[in-house]
Length: 80
Image 1 (tube, rainbow, N blue to C red):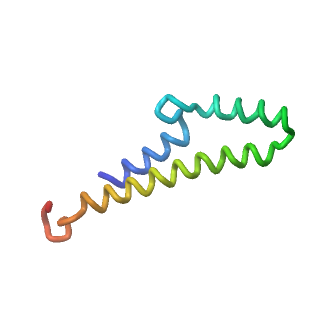
Image 2: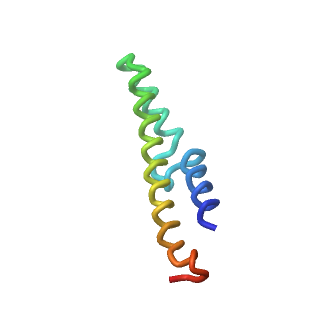
């Protein structure tokens, strides 16, 4: 059950707001307004890209650790 859950969780981070605190629309709006002021479009939107990539990686590592923890003992035919 954990691998599909992990994939779904990562998709939700990429496709929706992050825990209703930082929305993609708000983040990109702020990035666009900052880019309009500074004319550093590539750097600003690159930083937004890196921000979401790091969040997805942290979530991936957390899900993998949870899978590993819950999978202990499964190779012996039961839960630990």
